[in-house]
Image (cartoon, rainbow, N blue to C red):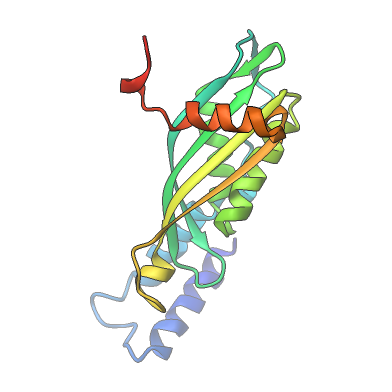
Length: 185
């Protein structure tokens, strides 16, 4: 990302909305926004590092409540929430930090929630696991701040491999939605 060009464009936008970019509170805004965009759109240049795996097996691995923040590609306003990932390993498991990095890789882009969910499931499934489920629950500021101005949330899901089977899908969904306080151990 060309930081200098972003600063120039933000300065022009400030003028277009009717503000004075030389005003004390706005003087450094173009630089702050350029730095912020570099961070929040870093997913285009990131690697989820899924190639780092450990020899271990388990019937299912579930990572709940992976917090994410993304930017709606339609209005460039944030949407945010939690992603839950379940997968059935095939002799190798991923560290939880790799799953968090995978979420960041796709959430730190101009995005829609449905594609975010699909991208995460597709990349994880491409690593040879038996099955993957990704659930995303999010709030969208593009809907809260403008348009219908409603507090509704959106849930999206993606199923790959063995979890595309109706019976497997129902069982894994029940496990994902369980809270740790509800588990028998």
